[in-house]
Amino acid sequence: MKGYVPGYQPPDIASWIKLNTNENPYPPSPKVVEAILAELGPDGATLRTYPSASSQKLREAAGELYGFDPSRIIMANGSDEVLNNLIRACAGEGEEIGYVHPSYSYYATLAEIQGARVRTFGLTDDFRIKDFPERYEGKLFFLTTPNSPLGFAFPVAYIEELAQRCTGLLVVDEAYADFADCNALELVKNYENVVVTRTLSKSYALAGMRLGLAIARPEIVAALDKIRDHYNLDRLAQAACIAALKDQAYFADCCRRICETREWFTHELRGIGYDVIPSQGNFVFAAPPDRDGRRVYDGLYARKILVRLLSDPLLAHGLRISIGTRGEMERTLAAITEIG
Ligand SMILES: *Cc1c(COP(=O)(O)O)cnc(C)c1O
Image (tube, rainbow, N blue to C red; front, top):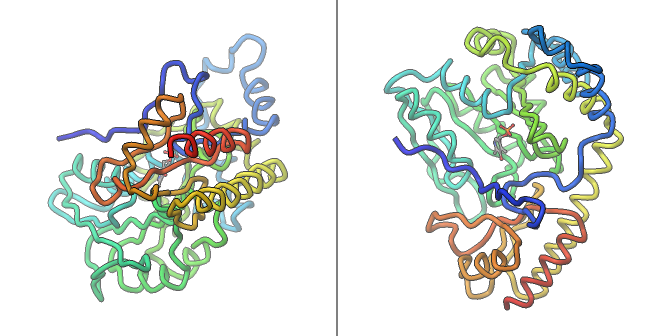
């Protein structure tokens, strides 16, 4: 099989403006750094012993934040881990999973490892799923919302309709929900088959710590609990996670700045003739007037600005550009203007 190809991480990372993997341009909360150092202690002796296997304190912190009992929350070593375990738990050899194309193609790689079949659904011009059946009988359907790479979000009422039409689980991958106007958390309370996944990689600036979670009914959480690595979150990640979730003031300020910069950058790009999809994430999908994504990608690359060019023919007319600091986006805009 072919493996998934993650976004490029240049070795000389500090010399780039890196806008290709939707990382947060700001550092994590200072309380996160304090918590990691406190956990480590003066000599690192804490690392001799295994971390908590249940991540119970994290489940309590996340439960309090999102308004769920901890029995409905499972912590993961990045949300990628919980996506993998959902497929391992629910879709065996020859069984089907579905997702929207374009969205996060890693679902297909994870399914292939389990020998599960993959069915993709396209999008209509108004960003609804094309030909979604009245009853979808695949074991899992993954809905990335806000969508990456396009940035739009599905309305909650539409997600609810999909939940009613799925006979298996509807996994709502909300990796970018903290930058959006709405989310599907309420649906977890009302529909037994809805699972919401979240990550601390983007909005909490902790991609390097590998922290994610899923919220679902307790029976699903219990099933996922059986098949994960029992020590899936290391000690430092557990300390970081609690501190990050508790510092909501810092978090909210960070998200607000990114959304403001996103709106400014969208407006400016449109001013120079780019076609920009209104985004609910920390990135935009933007197409130059000549619809040649490669040309602009190369021009930016030569100026040490890294964005995401997707090889799929459906997406080659544009670029996915993560939202950095205001300064980084001003430099990126100047470079794009110069490239023409
Ligand atoms: C980034 C991303 C993930 C992975 O998140 P991690 O927690 O870093 O594993 C999952 N789904 C989507 C749509 C993403 O963009």
